[in-house]
Length: 65
Length: 214
Ligand code: HEM
Ligand code: HEM
Image 1 (cartoon, chains in turn red, orange):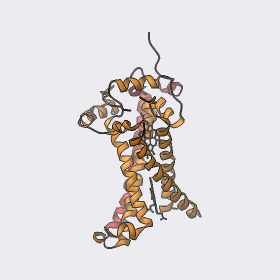
Image 2: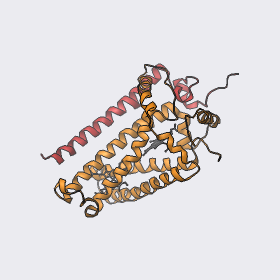
Image 3: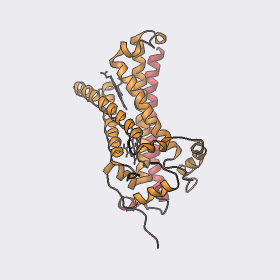
Image 4: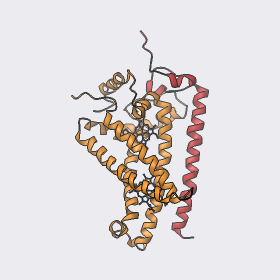
């Protein structure tokens, strides 16, 4: 196998491999940890935690007077 | 000073067009490499060829927009300085669930800036490697020597183009996840054009602190 063929095959292996790892780590792993720790959107809003089950209904930070 | 929003409409438009193009180019490109069903090659090649011009025009307009319009200072939000690099460990601690927060020194965190810069640099690379598959002599004869001829140089460009696709796919996967998880309301603003009422105030605060530009 020449270098070009090797790079082609490694591009397949590493490309699909890393992509699957990234999906596992982020889309599945990180999402699971967020549900367990209930840590959602805290950084952007900086004001309050948003619970896992209410993230899709969240309307922005509540004003505290 | 012109009245501007967190993300003015042209920026949301260019971003949306980029999104559609990258998804379309990835699907059609993957089909060209791995024809995963029968008889789609003509359509997929055609789709790739149309989208590559659309994405190219979109990129050029985006660059013109970021240097010559009322929104022209916003490109500074993507500049990476020493203070961004110094802040990176703190950002990583936050995403590693070790710390609850990190110092907000700019509109975008350092790795976020790197990702956005990578996106446009990589798009130029995809453009060059992609067009060099079409116009081999014109684009490759100046550098074909070390490869051992134009045909072999083109074969390398094809691999580079394919590797470029993976980098796009992997970073877009992360980018989309974090935009939903970390900034759901802001994601809705960019993708679905729904503006939360507090966004303007939030952004003006950032401008005041010098964390964002316009
Ligand atoms: C301006 C940008 C682009 C240009 C000019 C371009 C051009 C091309 C051309 C000419 C081909 C060969 C098609 C054929 O064999 O007939 C190709 C293949 C391909 N393109 Fe693009 N493309 C561009 C952007 C992209 C982007 C952004 C992606 C993915 C994110 C992508 C992914 C692919 C893939 C995976 C292939 C198949 C490569 C292979 O056969 O190994 N392209 N492109
Ligand atoms: C797949 C779905 C995608 C989603 C949900 C998404 C979401 C977002 C959001 C919410 C922002 C704004 C962040 C903020 O202002 O805090 C953003 C910015 C950005 N995104 Fe995406 N994005 C997607 C795909 C892409 C793709 C495919 C590209 C590039 C090829 C891209 C390139 C960028 C860039 C360069 C910015 C910086 C802001 C600007 O363009 O003015 N995004 N994205």
